[in-house]
Each structure stands twice: as structure tokens, then as C-alpha cells.
Image (cartoon, rainbow, N blue to C red; front, top):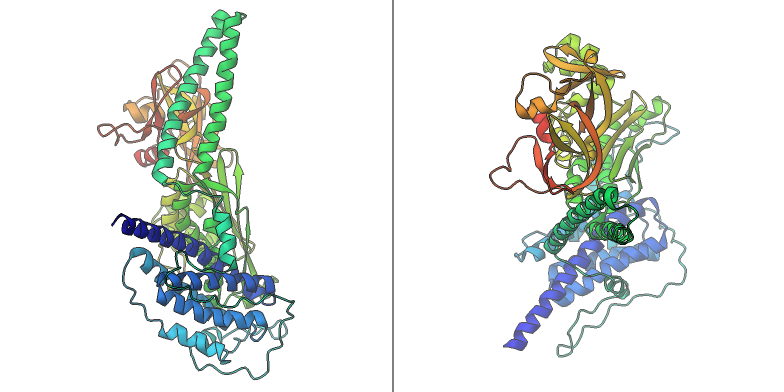
Length: 607
């Protein structure tokens, strides 16, 4: 019985490894298929795609996942003809291959969930078989040739042709792709029943396996536990440094103290290095999110009869796993909006003197302890007048107020729930759902979002996110004889003001900050429910800390700025955990507990 249990455990481990490997291959196939559509004669890319499908077919067949093996076998037949030059890739063939990959995702999810698969494979298999037998779907006519400038009206018909197993046969023979000598991969023989202990896989799988040997799968809960221990070490480090700083005033020059000070400095260095290492263990490249967008853009552009190129930069930039999990949905909304609202139809672009093909750029980079993500397009840009008109219709302000607003403030209306300037509602957009979801998710991540747009030139949306949410850089401020900590990732800038610079508009205190009007609140008044402004008590000057949350800005008036410090966010517990405007607490180097301000809560309190 023990041996039987071990065998079951071994098989479960093999299946788990197959699922991880299959997910990686499928993700890569999605990405590579979109590349193949533009580089149809890239033999290396074709071979890589073929090996991926071959690996899934071989391993799934051994494990008894017959439907997965059956579908990938039909895909492999088509891919093999493509790489031999017997077929040439076109958009309609690519539609069928991408449909096959989507079906494969469903099959693998059924395997993962341990449920009986009920999806009908007959239609997609018929399309693959038809292509393999030479019934190649017709290449859809281009949106418009540069010589005629006519609009493409055949996109949907071509897609329908791709879905028919009896699509028209190519009238002319397809010229073969120049092929260098490539070792043919013959199907592996079936393993004997008494010797089969591991899956029989192709050369591609062995290459992946060698890469996998350099990694260890670790439960996320263990990493969370390690991060908590690391947080405690940071607190101890901070206490030691503060003690050493105080002791230096009394014992400076003492040989024993100098040794203690050197040890404290060394512990500080090692703790910082260890902290970075622990944080990096939780980091994932943002490419895991970015790499699905070529497929999103490709499919949506085909649906809308647009020509769009997506360029990606900085996909190796790393983010904490918790941030990666939350940023995917907002980025999908923004990329889809760029294709749908931003990029114009090819004929419209041509009449405007632009290239027929629009460009969307997606980039990520690290700036200090923040990650900056930028989604830009060279499309039509935001229509400021239309947004003003819609804002007035929805009574989001008086006509006079809306007319006085800067373009940047006007742009922020698009994040309002239910706000849409689309004249036609479609299944892609126009219902006013999406941008408010973007703002909500960015707010949850304590991030900032900004919009830059010029009519006729395009739009750029810039998102700034903290690298991690557990250990943060904090700005220490004093107000009402209390010390608070503001997450530095939410701080845009600080400004010194006098009482005379504060004005009142509609019973709200504001200051003029360059070309904008900034609403302000006194931090002590907000928390202590005092009516008078505390920051100017007995003094002429105070400070305004400009907080940013998604697209919104707010000034917090405080008495003093005390500097920056790395702090660990600790929950307040069940009794105090729901305190408005407070994200948690931290233990300072002197042992005292200080509250960490929650920007989301502050914005809600002063709404």
C-alpha cells in the first residue's frame, strides 16, 4: 500500500509539473503566434512554435489527457506544413490556430480543476483538418491598399471563411519558404507498459526541463512568512541605529563605542541587502502581464478593422507578486481603450496625414522605489470639449466651474463611474464601465495615474506604483503634537505656505499651485475633529504635502516635515483595524508606535 501511495504522489507531481510547463508553453505560443503573423518566413520561430505544440502533445498523451493530445496533434500537422513551406501563414489560418490555443486553454483548465471536459472539439478540429488537406482559408483583402485608399469591408467575411471547414482552396501553388537543413523530429515510439515511469518528451521539453532544474517552487505562504520575519528585522535594525545615534553624543571617541558603531553599520548594510533579496524572491517580471497584450491588440484590431502595432519595452522590470496580480485588469482596460478609442480607422489616419497603421507603446521602468508604467498611442487624442459637454450633462459641476478647469482636471472626469463620450455603444466599449475600475484598482495599490493628451496626436496614461506593499518609504510629519507617517509613493511634492495663501471656494479651503487649484485639508482637523486649523497655531508658516491617488490630488496641511524613514506596515488588529484614514501602524526606532496614513481613506473622508 505504501508503494502505491508513493506511486500516486509521484504521478501527482508529474501532472503538476506538466501543468506548469504547459501554462508556460501556451503563454509563449500566444506571444509567438502574433509574431509569426508578421514574420511568416521566420523558420526559427516556426520551429519553436512546433516544438511547443509537440511537447504538449507527447506529455499529455502519456498522462492520458487524450483530448489535449488529440487537439495538439491536429495543430502540429498544420504547423509542420508551415515550417516545411507547404503552406504560408495568413491572417485566416492564424485565426484558426489562435482559436485552437484558446480551446487548449479550456481543456487544460478542466484538467487542472479535475473535471470532465465537455467542450466540443469537432468544429476547431474540422478547420485544422481542412487546412492540413489544402483547403486554406482565403487571405482577407487588406484594409485598403496605399494606391486605392479603399476601406476594408471584408474583415468579418474573411473570419467567417476561416471558420468554414470547406474554405476555398488556394488557386496558385504556395512558394516554399527557403529551408535550411533541419533535423526532422519524428514522433517518439510509445513506451512499453512495464518501463514507463516518466513522460516521453521531445527535445524542446528537455531544454525547458534543464531550465526548470535551476528553480525551486516555493509556496507563497512561506514567502509571506519570510517577509514578516524580515519586517521584524528591519524594525530591530531601525532601533539599533537610533540607539547608536543617541549614544554617539555621549560616547564619541570611546574605543568600545566605535566598535559598537561599526557593528551597527555592518548590520544595517547586511539587513538592507537581505531585505532586497527577500523582496526579489517575491518579484515577478511584468512581462508576465505584458506578454498577453500582443494577442489582445491583434484580435481587437481585426474585430474593429484597424491596423495597429504594439511595441513593448521594459518587460524585464520586476514587481511584487501581489502588485502583479492586481495590475493585469487595469492594463487590459487601458490597452483595449487605446485600440478602440485612441487609434483611428486606417482611412481616417491617412486623411490626417498619418501612417495607416497606428502604434501603441507599452513600457515599464523602475524609478527609485516605484514602478512607472506608460501606455501611449499616436491616435486621435482626448476630445476635451466633448468631455466638458458630457460632464455638464451629468452635472459633475456647474457650467462655470467646468469651463474654468484645466485640461488635466477635465481628463480626470473619464474615471467617473458611468462616464462615456462614445456615441455608439458596442460590445467593446461605450457603456461607461472600465475606467472607474482602473482607478479603483490603482487606488488599492496606493498608486498614481496621470493622463497626457493632445488632440490629433495621441494619449499617454502614466501609472506609478510602489514596488512592494509590505515595507514602504514613509514621510514623517508632525501635526497637532502627533507624529504621522505618509506613504512616500503617494506623495507628489511638498510646499511651504503662509496663512495668506489659503483661499476659500464654495466653503472649501484651497491654494493655488502653479496653474491649478489644489483643495487642502488640515491633517489634525481631519483626525481630531477640531474646527480650527491647527497647523498655524502660534506660527506664520505651515507645510502642504500634496497627496496623489490615481488621478486625484489633495493637499494635507501639517506643522512640520521630519524626514523620511523606511517603515513596516503592521495591522491595527480587529478592534482598531477599521479606523478611517489609517492604513496601519509601525514601531519606530525609539520603540514608540506611530500611525501610517491611508491615502484612500483620507480622500474618502474629505470627499
